[in-house]
Length: 208
Image (cartoon, rainbow, N blue to C red):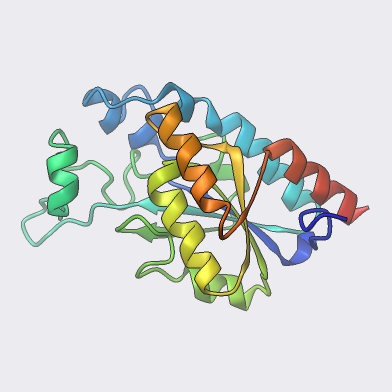
């Protein structure tokens, strides 16, 4: 029996990284800036199906929302490295409570808890670890965007916190396929890499 097959859905959380409208929607900030990843745009229905399966088995779904908090003048507080990488980001993008900051419509109905994040990892300066431990979660399956950024950072932080850590290979995407593939190979050192279908099958088998 594989590690994934042995999981207990009631102690498992799907952590969905940054599947938000400002990243993915045609009217979102990244589309406006020309930073669109077709692979990322294809993720929401696939990830939503996994979330539905896990919730039906008694598991938990958590979403992270990248957030640009406004300063006293209402301007977004953007870290220098992100400003250099994405100079098109402007006032109102990823603002807390905005349409762009929201999880995409395919995902939103399945999310039990959402945490606002300000850096790559969904654990950094958020209440994610507290929520997971309070809910009795021991296994974390990570998916979302981007594979080499928020996903990889969250996976490593979950591993360091002694969660059994899984990463859904086709539930993640990056801007380049080779970067996605290399990042998955690297994460295999600290997490089990498996497909959405295999994870869903393991959840269903364990819940039966």
